[in-house]
Image (cartoon, rainbow, N blue to C red; front, side, top):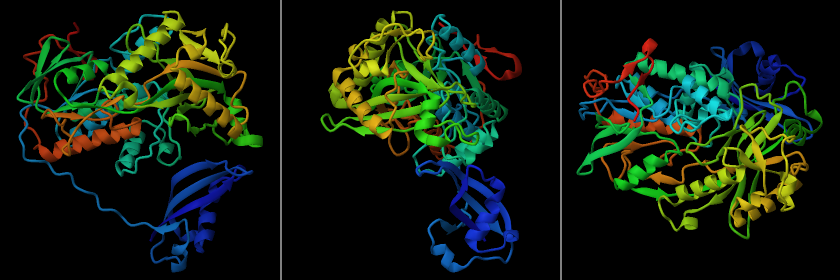
Length: 560
């Protein structure tokens, strides 16, 4: 018999070795009758005066042992039944060339992994560099160097999530989530991601996970090409025929997975010119707000702040603004992290948050953003993109036209007054910040919603409006500002052979949901096409200058 038991509590001073005893007591059995137990969920419960760890645990009882039937009527106790594994069957349509995946973020990597595990030997092309070279390029930019517009915090192996907290939380109730978490653990993430309530990998560890997934895809016959930017799509009678790489190499293509990420503005414009249906969608914009981590710990944990068994605290705050109908909310909160420069084009400043696995910077930051809607840009499919660019270019100008970010003390923002010198502030953004009045950067209505929401939050979390807190702008890349419309077969509705997926296509909002969407697209491709017989090399006769780098892990195509 297998049973799931929820809401098993331990105090901060109790050891987890007591869990079997507590489970046995709850189920009214002898602890020796528990054959096996496994953590399913662990969370910190800070809703009461006393703080507890709350556990959900699956147990397997020894043969012949059962529990009283009336216990199964109690909340928190339920029987577990083995779920049959669905077999993914190949389709009958023939493929003459390998499935091509544009983008090596979570959606592209998980689509590639599933296709490779089923023998489809996919080819992944990515306009940015492999993760090791990409990290070097980003560090140079943060140190005051030149922005690489093709390989930065938005573009390159691993996608934007490579420079983040590596959060693996999601609200989607999809069975594929477990597959994603297991895969992350299999390829190098801490196994605790399988059971903690708010799992994260950390930007340092996610880089190794990404490389290990790439190596597995290659081991199974797939290929990766970096510094390979898709610059055109060739179609005949709404049927995909080929794509152009770096304005030079033409690659025949029957199945194209578009997993480009939500910053792929050149791809959006290309699709728009080609007549692919794009639907404007709501997103959110605002700033990053940064506090001392010990302040957030105190707000969340009270007298228990600093306890060695407690993780650094996070928060999630929302506010519904009645006068405007807009929402203010925190997003992608990074405990123990820092604010980072996330520009992907010259003359634009964008901010994001990042933390390492240890979350030990002493600083807490979060996006603080307000919803905007297609009506704000008259439902133009590319209107949201233009709004993002306008604000990012304005932030660049206000910061000093050197990629310094405009910033302001939170209490100055509340008083409508500019901040002066921020050199001694806690602002962690590199290459630096410039003191400004963010009321001159943000649209007036957005700023007013933000101020009203902050007053509301400070009542719920006294101390949030701290004199030390800093706001840094501008945060615009919370999600895609449009959706690439697709039908039930996952094809773009206006072009056969293109499979949009992930955040950039408007069907996901985070690492896990993007990975899940990549799996869905891969499953659809497998169900439609038979396993191919071709050699996987990427049309070698067409790409004479393609060079194989050491250990055969990465290729580079010509860059023009």
